[in-house]
Structures are given as C-alpha cells and as structure tokens.
Length: 203
Image (cartoon, rainbow, N blue to C red; front, side):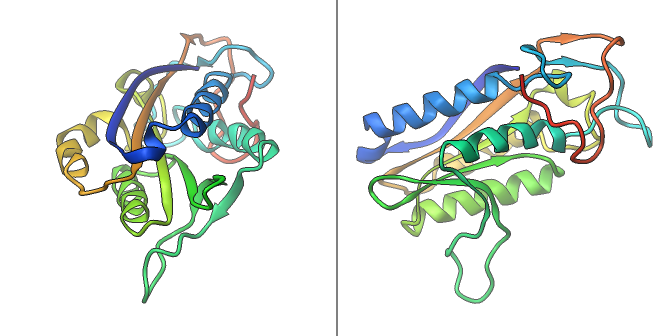
C-alpha cells in the first residue's frame, strides 16, 4: 500500500520534536505500507469496481484488521476509550500506544462515512487539548482508492475543506495528522475485499 500524502494539522511542543515520536511515526508508516491485498501479498492490488451499487466494490474493515493485528504485537491496544468527556464518553479509538511519558498515541483507520472521519479527528483533537493524547493519526483513502470502496467511505477530499479548522486548534504540545493511502495496482484477477472482517489484509 502507498502513502500518497501526510497532512499535518498540529505539530507543536517537545513531543512533536522528540525521537520517540519519530520512531513511533516511522514504524506506523512502515506497517501501513506493508498492508497488502490479496492476503499474503507484498503489494496492495484492488479489484477495480465502483462501490456505489449494492453488493459491488470492496470492503474496508479487512484492510484495517491486518494492520491492527501487527500493532498489537508492538504493544498497541485495540478498541480503547479516551477519558475526554465528563457526561458521555465518545466512541473508542481503534488503537492506542502508551508513550514513556504516560500519555497516549492514537490511531484511527476510517471504515465509516465522512461524518465518522470528522468525529475521529474531533475526538483526537480533544484528547490533545485535554492532555490525554500526545499524538493522533487518522488513515483515510485517496480519491483514487475511495471510488473502489464502500460507497461514501470517509476520504481526504471531503475532509480537505475543513483542514484549517483543525489547524487552528490551540494545542501547544502534540501532533495530529491525516495519512492518505492508495493501492499499488488494479486488477480484475484479484478477489474483491470482503465487506466484513474476513480476509485480513497484510503482506
């Protein structure tokens, strides 16, 4: 899988400049690049079919699932809540890693619609402001990949008009980034990615 763009919304303070963050970020990006399809492949080849019609196109969850399995091996924890609200906690984070400072690094891999992408970024931004998170990363498909996935999946193009909002958040120590991913190749000889958790995708 290719990382075609990284949009840095927030990069401030000591953690953003630390060797610890550089190492975590490099390892995370390496694991994202190793996501492959079909399972066992060293590259990510998508079945080129639009996801607009019911039962057509490719699913998203299996793409995330293989990466999550690999992160768990590196001491990340899956499906964790964040203590960022008093009355009602927002939904869980896909994966978190505890840093030596005791704060957390969060990863969200978008499998929902564009509203879900906004919630994910807002959740991580609030985690930074509350001092719970040191960094947050949201992974979304590019325009080129998006058209072959479940219709209306959250994607970078639809987030782009709102980037200045997140960039204006008054965070003095932390990182918030969007990683935009894309397939390596297209072929009708590979299977479609199931719409569910079957067939985890990792090279």
